[in-house]
Image 1 (cartoon, rainbow, N blue to C red):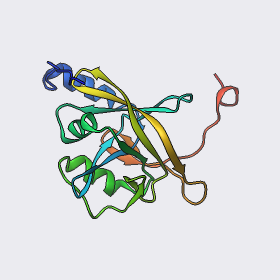
Image 2: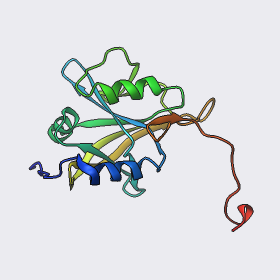
Image 3: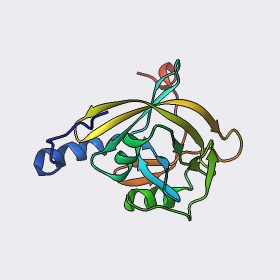
Image 4: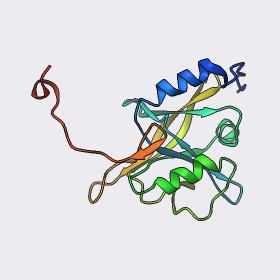
Length: 180
């Protein structure tokens, strides 16, 4: 498999305007995890997305170049995707600010030899299914081979918006109930 190259340089006025506009879209927060030597390498991602129900596929965009990009390209095994809860901001920060770190301090659960974040809202054990060029990122699509999710207790997600964390607010009416 070849690694696509990108000529996009993420600076300048156009890039800043694009980033500013993107900050208006709130996202959930996930962490991609993969074994790395004797530890676990993780990367915070707000670009996690379900793709297909049959087969079960999820996608995540990963910056090139970077350690996670290298590890995902090289793997013929599994990687984990964990959806973080509203009390896991410190974990999101750790993996966002320490992209080359291998952590032994974050609680992990092992699934078929692959780490996922302990006490996350949901986790997906993925096998690399496809890789697609996405400019300065690669889009990794994984086939979900196992999964789990909380069904009791606090199931509020960690939300990222305008470079800050939030939790869900008040429920508002949908569709006709909310008026047009």
